[in-house]
Length: 113
Length: 110
Image (cartoon, rainbow over all chains, first blue to last red; front, top):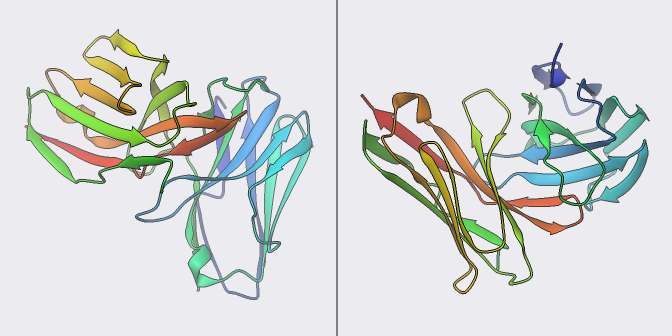
């Protein structure tokens, strides 16, 4: 595997379900990110982790719960989501400097019924 | 006011045409500007990265920043059908905090 991988690529869930998105980076980076890309809206930063520590939460509702067990893996735990949470969720990684290039995974397409 | 504004298009041009994609930004303190390309069912990939004002060229692609008017542009020369994608402009709002334009969907017709 190379670059940034994400699983699953597609996910359909009901509003009462609990599911998790997984991201893994194979680039030796120490910063990881979650972004949300909704139709007709700009890509939106959700969370930033540096060296496994959360350093940014962009006012994300608590029904989204990130976890970063090590610098290579990032999870997004989902529970009691709303239909408006349907979107493409993108993971990215970079070196932990302020303006280092961020490399994106292919995303998980989430549909909440 | 959105920090980065971009016309979502769609934009459709014939193969071989010169394409101009544009964004405006609101904060004169922004210094780093990026263009990402996103193919269907893929994540964004960095295409061009510029600092402050001026031009940067890479093959058929030229990125231009005009800080006096807070305007950033991407030019594609001799456009190819493989250039068909969504192009996203972005800048750093703060350390590691990328803000994006809405993206312009571009189609190059053979």
